[in-house]
Length: 226
Ligand code: IPE
Ligand code: IPE
Ligand code: MG
Image 1 (cartoon, rainbow, N blue to C red):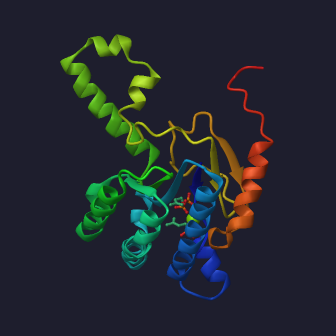
Image 2: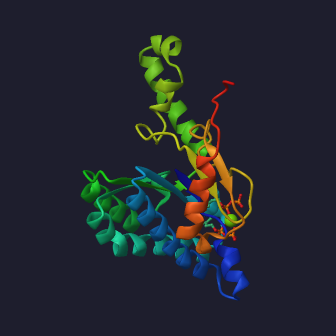
């Protein structure tokens, strides 16, 4: 399952506070959802934390978000280790501050054998960026071995995406009432179920999470069949 965590800015605005307060509060929602995943035996959760397009926000907000991500990772480390959670960060890592990259490397290495829950954070990620970087690497391999052009199907191509080896999400939740993809998991969402809720991300806690799962359980997934 995957979540587009949206509405932090509006949550803060409603309270007359600055946008970063909303992001700060959103971390609590992440903790709540991760805990529920562990409790319910959900094997994968991925979270859209920062998009390629989000680099265009004010320097103040971008710097604040990078600091928040860094601090949260440091702070929550014990939770990952204690609950046997494996953390991975996917996206264009070249654009991240060195300090954050160092922290990510450290946590990924420390948790790589954890096998209760895989938590994937998409940072500096966009679906088109992902497909492009995959196409480039595929083209390089195909130049060396032209038979690939004939034999490669969707399964082969998806091994070039940054999500290689991670199952496509069954369910994608987006909070805050926005009904768009915003360049998230374009390839991987081919058959995902979508769940949209007006609840802003900082208010999306345990009960909201269960509501989404309950609605998902009523969906009829046909994959093009009847
Ligand atoms: C989502 O909340 C978090 C990020 C995109 C980093 P927003 O910051 O987009 O909040 P709104 O949409 O402005 O309310
Ligand atoms: C999508 O939210 C990105 C994340 C939640 C990280 P945005 O708030 O950036 O999306 P748009 O701009 O409303 O489409
Ligand atoms: Mg938003």
